[in-house]
View 1 (spheres, one colour):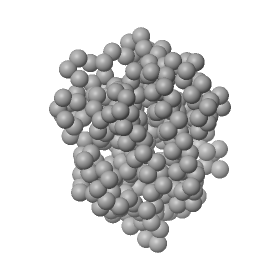
View 2: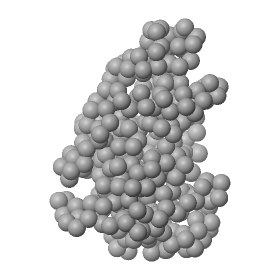
View 3: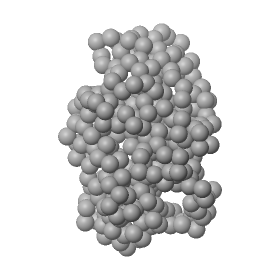
View 4: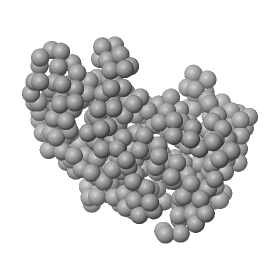
Length: 322
């Protein structure tokens, strides 16, 4: 595993780079980060290229010939959205994954980084979750469809490396948040969902209602820190196994809710609805591989939440909350 790390860094400068999912939260953060790397960014907005269309993706890849591809595009959502639309989550993510990875191989892409998710690990995986716990048990039922599609992507990248010699790698981020996040009552992840609720509660003089008991522990990473980690991996990592990317800090949902209420200025109280699901009670990743290689996140949760809420307000909070 030690020799998966490159002794001579891969050079990004001058390369043609395609960030699939460039307008999403992760993709836009990565585009910001790559602007300091002297690369030529190749754009394919969602309205111009449907990544679920195999023929269109193959033709686009053959025509544009990127040298580096980072696959950030995905259909994502919170617990409720996953529960209501499992078929959509499975189909969309499988098609995006298969089409982009195979077209990258056909076009001779020199380096591809696939973005997985911490939810692909078994629901009863030993904590912190190490990379080798993948496929070691049953998945969390609330997001199984999404997780299965993401597992397929991680394995597909490894299979193309094994059979065709493609320099395709994978990264597993923990729960992400920050500028560009989605604020939607049914589709948001935990931090944007709580910001949305706290902002509404602030003006209504109502309590901030949180799903679950508040006892669940989660790990959060500011999206610009993830973007920096992805560039680090592109430059320094070349192995078949996925690499965890987390903050290494566990936060109870109850504490998170209080932090968000304080950040938003919600002077009411926090209530927990134990009739609603909250997922596994502890989920933190073992990020020792990337930490030992020299990368660490730079943004604290408190600072990240302030920036996230500022972005929410700047994008028109009242419209987003509607």
